[in-house]
Image 1 (cartoon, helix red, strand yellow):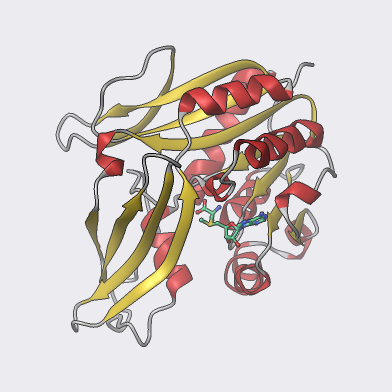
Image 2 (image 1 turned 90 degrees about the horizontal axis):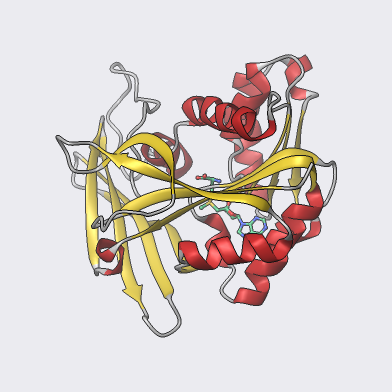
Length: 283
Ligand SMILES: C[S@@+](CC[C@H](N)C(=O)[O-])C[C@H]1O[C@@H](n2cnc3c(N)ncnc32)[C@H](O)[C@@H]1O
């Protein structure tokens, strides 16, 4: 939900102007915060570095519209993906707007979408599990998050890899709204409340349009802000080995992230940062 710098899907130049009445919040979300083709290649590359083999069986937890799972399936005829999400209308939207247009009939047989709680899925066993855009932050207690990470461990094949992205830095604790202009609309990321005692953080996404209309609270999040130290400890307690943090570099022109991630032992004192915690199930 914080904006990452990678190629996005863009509104075709000929499309009619977007307004709050005509826009589809899932389309706007995908254009604003997701880069599924780039991400599918990115996680395949990192998986190969850890496991020494190609990423064939992917599970996308909290998959929403499953667009990343679709792109994984498209990458190779042996690739399979499972997308897991609780929310049937979002999965149905993904079936209509991502699965049907992106995948042919054969490719669709290699994608499974499960309307389930991520805590309740252990099979089929996967090579890699992704929980992206901080979705695991819905787990607000250490016990809940530990149960989730343990369940991921159980769901992986030997040598399998869990990737969770994370965010932080003093900027994310500020009450503020960041705006990013896209063709036809503005994406607004609101940091609404943060409680330093519980680390509960409430955020929202709004979209505004050239005609002055606004899609307020298109997505609302009630999360716990987890630290990298906590995530690393929970990975270790679940049995993961080779636990590392991939830290995003800084774009010297904008001061924001540059989309290039490197293994690091010490993070920088950045105002805002995004990183990825990685752990491997022993082979
Ligand atoms: C922020 S969206 C993530 C979308 C996508 N993964 C991304 O990277 O942008 C979070 C999704 O998690 C789903 N969700 C929340 N709690 C869940 C749970 N316990 N099990 C499965 N899905 C859950 C919601 O329905 C929602 O679609």
